[in-house]
Length: 418
Ligand SMILES: [Zn+2]
Image (tube, rainbow, N blue to C red; front, side, top):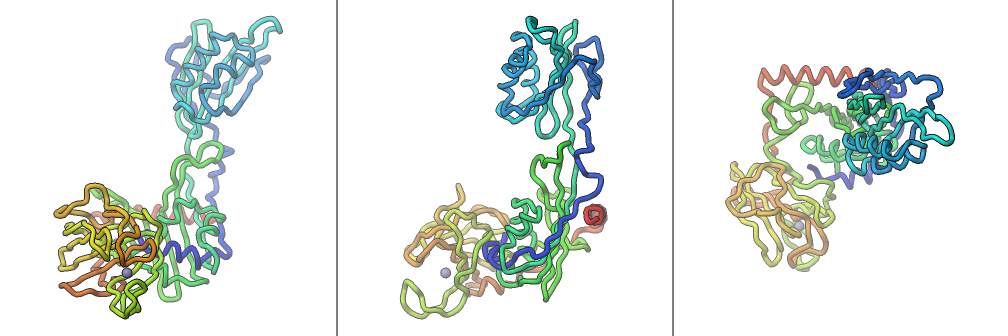
């Protein structure tokens, strides 16, 4: 939750980004582990499916399990058997999911249907169904997913080009880049504090199947950023009882502060707090907040836990939300395209909760942006100078479990770095 992804992408890039992967994670060597539990069979399912001589094995990629029956019958399998087998395999595969079909055939002669020895369908995570044919009917076995956890560590140096594209080309999954920015939302103002030559590191974990393909979403484990002024290493950790993951330094101190200076992701500051010539009103006056340019519809977050004081339009500010916070702070959000569904006065909101979306409503705006104000005891102050409050440290019991997580992340990074 930070302004500056756009600016960051504009100003930083990876020079010399290196990618390391842990050894022993090469998925080519990992064979799927079949679960050999036939439900109705006289013969056991052989995990390695050593086939008798005369059986030819075929392997195809299908875009859907709906293609199984036709594929088998085109290969010479008798039609009703093909559709029976197809139905059994399809039962274990989501409709429309891309899949691998493997089967073994004995071809008896050109005038006879081919004898199907086995057929199996598997999806990306390696799970699926295996069917063996026999005198007593079809034997069915579910194949368990065969996934491995792979940790990847990427280091780079920031340049004047795009952090986004260089990180992606270095192997950082693009979906992780906003997580990276969010992890630093309390520690760095990435729009202003990052310069070419600064060094970043990202470590993330992902599940890979037996072909080495990623399955599901990768997760960020560790981020590090070193600038001329400061250096921060952060570990992802979910304390027992917490709803969500948070970011902690090596000592177990949370990055989260009581107050967010920038209640929006990926925005660019277009106007700071202070005196300026107002482009719409045409005279010098105090610009009482910070303007963040962002596309219409970009979520806007509550800067801290709050009670909604109002959520209604005004002439200049357009759709405006006002939140009151415990410590005598008030925050105001102008020009929203719309409010979060159901937002109403008296409602309690948590820090980081979406309260509305960027827009261009009201007479005092010339383009889509969020005008964000912080009032302390009734006085407007510069949102970027707000004291964000004390960081929370984990309790002694939680810090112990944090150290365990931290050390395992460091170990994974070390082996990923080879
Ligand atoms: Zn403004």
